[in-house]
Amino acid sequence: MINIALDGPSGAGKSTLAKALAAKLGYIYTDTGAMYRTIGLAVKRAGISPEEKEAVIGLLPSVKISLGFENGEQKIYLSGEDVGGLIRTNEISAYASKVSAIPEVRAHLLSLQRDIAAANNVIMDGRDIGTVILPHAQVKFFVTVSDKERARRRYLELIAKGENTTEQEVYEAMKARDLQDSTREIAPAIPAEDAIFLDNSGDFDAVIATALEIIERKTKN
Image 1 (cartoon, rainbow, N blue to C red):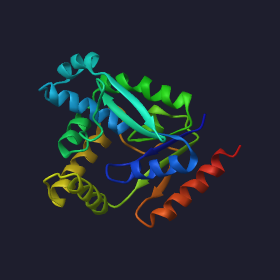
Image 2 (image 1 turned 60 degrees about the vertical axis):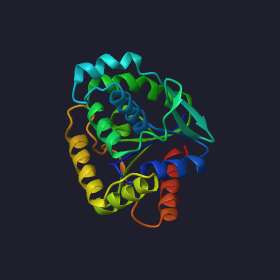
Image 3 (image 1 turned 90 degrees about the vertical axis):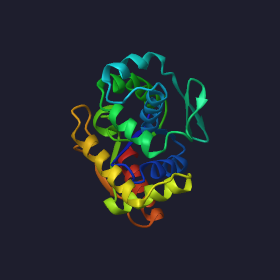
Image 4 (image 1 turned 90 degrees about the horizontal axis):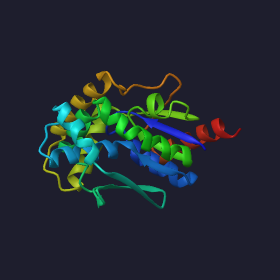
């Protein structure tokens, strides 16, 4: 199976890029961030602080996450409920960042993520795909965009979903998450040594074309 890893900071457009590449290649798209967000949602609903490590760990056996795939795109369910539309808020992003730093949470999801990759040609995006989850992926990208542009894109996404926020608030939340994700002891969000940096700031079609050329070159054998 061919595995392609896309890592990078929040708001770099990893998911949009990964979905487009998966559609072009006919691969399964897997959004690992959605899995951590779903655990964050479960923690919030349980009335647990994401910083209460033991309480979060104690909740894990009851957190039933399942995936579906529709036209190559991931659908995510919490105890059978489609929560894809509930996990993209700033609040749940903050929960996800905190719970993803707990080793037991990462272990809880790791086997699910690797099982998907073992059974399918996949494009998987997240923070530590190339370094931890799929270290043997044939292609590893680290997606980059300027901080201001990332915040602008994320702000527009949240506003379109009805969130009441400002671009400055989004920027500050994003930078706080960047710091936490890149400095955590477990699976920090850093580029793999063999990652190819992919600038997603410019024309999207050109970025896709560049990525496809790299994928073809590195997987043709």
